[in-house]
Each structure stands twice: as structure tokens, then as C-alpha cells.
Image (tube, rainbow, N blue to C red; front, side, top):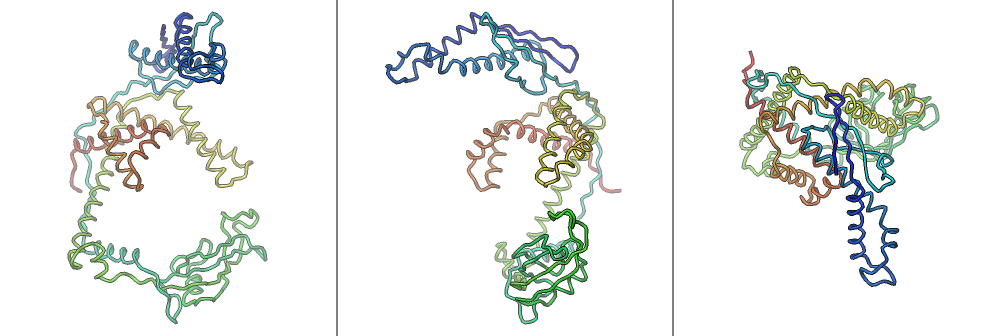
Length: 428
């Protein structure tokens, strides 16, 4: 096998892989012989089927696999012998992979190369802390929030729906006499009116309602309804209440028991610690983002145009899928895509540039993602999703997501490195 590499410019390599006929055909025949030995065909003993039948049944697949093998082998050889750093693995259209008449195999493909990244100063950067102390008022509000989050519904008393209560109701939006939206069993609260309904009017209409009550209230029909003519027009919201509940917050005793503490003082101490840890994590993330932004501003890096176009196109395809899922009329999708095109290119360039700078900094500081780190990440994903680590590993393998995981872990390492190397100042 012969591998030739040309570089028309610093960001592009043209790789030509040539396999002589005797080498390719020899490997091909050995492959056929191997298949003959392991495949059983009706009417023939194992290993005795005619080679012509084996070739007719399996020859095309064997040739395709052998061609791909030589492409991958040639690609690795090009990197090792010519010190090129490709941006990604080659994707070669099937029609470009052809055998010569003499039985030899040759394929040429172009690959974008990683550009040179010139890092500016990234050690000892300065960042101001925005961490604020957790006060008693903060803890008070957190306790109130927890009470609301863990409140349990109980049938409302004779006063009907209260301000903190919840109702189940059937809701219809009408445009004239036409029902343009209908839902059954919606959860409704006094403090949050549906879009397009005046909040004060909603509160007055819903407060005190009992099971079986109904009412109507004016609404500006939302853009999400199917009837395009009705969107943004005046309409009527008709509500029929089926159930009314008071939301009863947990007692101090219940809060303490659920958090495995003896009393409210211990509960508040535990809650404060959790809040402080959470605030510290958020502050570290903010600092890392600010520091990485500074590094990106100082770094010099030209993203290859071919890769940039490809990534921008991926983003446009994702946007097209979103438009389809949102049932945007087909006539409107084309103009929307064209309007999005400059932004897609800008976002692609920003993302690619960040990736290149992160990898360059990691290389400069010998930061590498270990197998243990990958396994630990898989274990965390499995725990969050209540499944087995091997199931997660299988999924990531089938979806070819391990490279993406490695990139994400590497960025975390770089961000942590920048923060550890930075000078964190107290607020002025």
C-alpha cells in the first residue's frame, strides 16, 4: 500500500491511497477462503462450497469492507508519516471508491487540517469573585420554597379555591363560536393566568370557585393555536372546574423527618450548607466561563472554511427540523432558514474556535482524559438515569458519542485548570 499526501494550503490535505492489484486481490481471496471455511451452504459440506458461489454471495460485501480497511489504514499512515492533524475522519461518498480495471484500488480524498493555534497568556489571569454570603433571609426563602414544592393537595373547604390552591379544569378557547383550543384536566392556579388573559381578571374569576362551577373570561388568542386566522385576535376562554384543592405545606416535623434531622435548627444548618455548596459551584462555573472567554479573546486561530461550512449546515438542518416540529408552514421555512444562515455560521465558528483553543491549551499543559474519568462519567450518567453503567456504555457506543464525551470532559479539565491558575479577587 502506498500513501501520498499533498497540502495545497496549510488547512487542507489531499490523501491518495493506492493498493496494488496483487496485494488487494490477495487479501480479497484470503477473505473469500476464510468465509468459505466458516459458512455452511445447503448441499455442501462445511468448507467445500464452490468459491464462485461464495464470491457471488459475499464478494461485494468483502470488497467494501476491504476498501474501508485500506482507507482507514492509509489515513492513519498519512498522519504518522506526514505529521498532519486532521479535523475529523474522512467521509468518502461510495461512488468515489472504485476498483481499477487491473484489480488495483486507489482512492483520493481531501481532509481539513487543524489550524495552528497561538495561545495568549492563560496563566494567572484575574477574575473578581461574585460570591455572596448566604443570609438568614436567604434560608427563610429557601424554607418557604421547599414548603411550597412539597405541599400536598387536599380537598378545599366550603370557601372554594384559595390563593395558594390548585384546580383541575376543562379549558376551551373560542374564536366566535369556534373552539380553537381545548384541554381537559388542566391544573390552574390563581397566581398565574393563561397567556393572553389579564392577571387581575383571572384572579377575580377563579378565586373561590367550587367543583362544578364554570365561567368565561376575555382572552387574546395565542399564536400557538392551529387556526392561523384567530391568532392574536380577541376570543373567549371558557373554564369548567372539576376539582378544587388546598395545597397543604409540610409541617416542621415532616420537613425534619424527610431530611433526617432532629429539629428545625439542624434542618436550617443542613439547608444552609447545601445552599453554600450550590452557590460555590455556580460561582466557580461563572469564573471559569469568564476566564475561558478571556483566553478565547487572546488566542489566534483560523477555522478551516470547509469544516466551518459543514458545521454551519448541520446547525441549519437542526433549525429546519425545529421549524417542522413547530408546524411552521412550508412556505415560511425557506426564508426563515436564509435568515438563520449567517447566525448558524457565526455560532459554528465560535464553537469550532473554542474547541480548537481548548484542545491546544490541553496539549500545552498535558491534560488528558483518562479511561477512569470516562468510566466515572458513565457511572454518573447511569446513576442519574437509574440504569446500569453497561447499558449507558452500550448506548454511547451505538450512538458514537464517546468522542463527544471526551471533548466535554477535556473542556471541564481546561476550565478547572484556568480557575486554579487564576487570581480570584474579592469584590471592590
